Image (cartoon, rainbow, N blue to C red; front, side, top):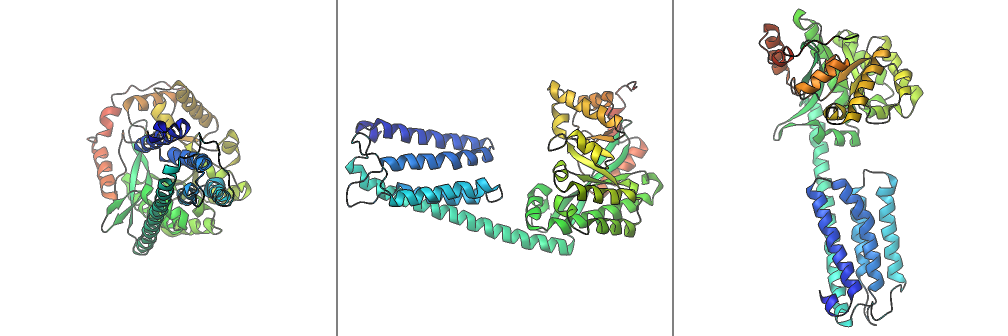
Length: 424
């Protein structure tokens, strides 16, 4: 308003645009679009600051301070994008630092009286810009320090958990078209003494960054094989299979094949009942080494499963080039196949292609009877999702199996109502 009253419409427009941009950032953050907000801020804020510096033509004897905001933007960008690629991590910060140096040492500014900041506002602007830029730097530094402390504490707690085996496995049932439990996927949970059960999305990314995912992954495999051995020892559960996720870091270990083979041998499980799930991104690099490792474990009977098929880097050559025995349709396709015709077409094509390649198909994220019925009609035979059961601890999973054997288990209630389709 002040710039409008003193005949500085361009300055008023620029500040209005900055306010509008800030409101848009708040809206994006409220909607959970934090990544989009961060990327936009990292690219647009430096432009605002650079444009403002062109108007920061202060009277003689004063030093402009608008360019100090480049330091806060540079530090904030590095902190926010520290886990991203080179451009976001270093590029944005470097450009801000270069701009800071340029505007600190070169007199680049508008000299038109209609564009220059009024003399009465120059001194106020210097103090305002200096204090807000300093406050921004202090605020970001405090956040970085808090994050560093939290990460250090997480590292300590996670190492304790590995040493004390404070993790536990939950099992999500995999169901066939008759409503029978034919297997389970092992999903890790962290049983923390103070915070209770911590889901994997809260600690797995950190474990991958620090390399702790390797010992955690080996623990998961040992625990899953031990449970599978117990199932094999009982006639009523001898038919169950076990699916275990393998991280990229774990798979890339030079002794991966030896470690897995030794765990399977010591546990005494039938290797063909163990399914190891890989994500599509792991097929992009070192194809020869990847195939060799997969072939070595396939030789002893382990089945390889391609997780989240259709969402990453996969192509038809992946299905043909790698020794896969199973693919899992990503839940995003299952969720949208009834409302989006293209999702339905993709799902049908995946099932048909897998059938022709003699690959088993598992549909993830099945949540409604309609989804189950349509998948069943399309030819999918194995299903997994909250329609049937959430991940359960071993005791609850055992109760589920017991109820299923007695015929009173809720799964059979809705499955039995669905007609059996005629498949070709």
